[in-house]
Length: 476
Image (cartoon, rainbow, N blue to C red; front, side):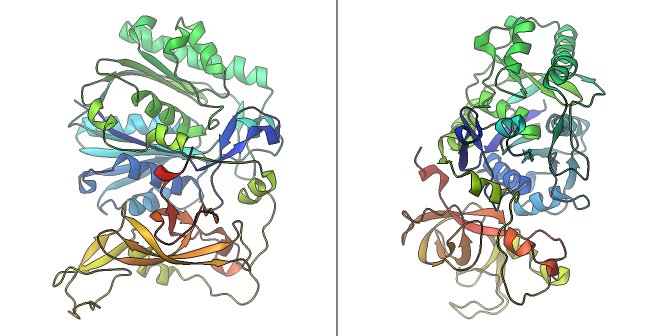
């Protein structure tokens, strides 16, 4: 039996109140130092919490907003998620259906025997023209699913797909923002017929009736179109998963999988779930929930519930535009060091995988990795030590109000980890009224966009780890 053995999600902390852009509700917005890779890493770490990462044989990464045209984000995500090096990595893109495409590919791969366990991660941070209807609907987020053949919580019973060649929504390589055709054309010639055909085909293939499904999970471009599809197909309103557009927005390629995670958080053994995604056609899946679902639900993951509840509302539209790089941020003046791919390669283990060392002679933990133990002075008696998922407390901190940044002040921290080890790092999502010595923190994988603007950086995005207050402690 092959299927979903674990799940996770990530919703950014910040939510833009849609009143400031003429809408209703709120939308999740990636912080200035987040992108689809950092969000995917957060979702994967939520999914793999408490699990053996060495058992994972591959990672599929789905997005429509890949940071690079030629460089695999799946590799960065795999390394930052501390997965072993000899795994298969691949990237799915160019379609809102890329999340479900990656899901089906992973299930087929495990079924074929080419892998025992695969992680599927989907994340999106789609750009929209300021003031447009798309800006009101778009939101940012990520989901991750672990596919395997042991302790399966959700099995794939049937699937059905159709394609539809249509320019209803698109973005070419030169476009800064997503484009769309007139709404009625997009809905009546694209979304509605494609979803109807895929779902109808699935139900006919499996001889299903609407009443057979405990929940239907439909990608929806806005708050109401998914419910329209469900009604047309004979489903009751109570069967339809809330598309959460008014809570976080339409999260693109991640949307269908994020909504599936939300549905699974409420699912019970024996439930049949219908999942359908859209993008130049549609994918539809019939999923069966097993008794293993209860173990995942009680595992302490943040999931959709936790991340949706943990939020900070902003009405500062100007700040939001800076985060999106739609308006410029002042650059650092003065001389700068050039980027070196050679130097960066040497430091990937500490900067991307957040590995330190542990002395085998005395057990002392250090970061960054060292040859000589500063506690017992043993030489070359170190073993790798991962700080991934480790919590800590702030020992001391510094606030810089002078350096230009999308987030002022620029805050640096010294963090002592529970279990040993100390790290100096930048801090993100800082609430200057609440930062204090001994504040509980964790490490989060982020970018440093300010340095990326320097021409000597050769167009390379700078990823590393920052400290951040525990999301579980952020007030609703």
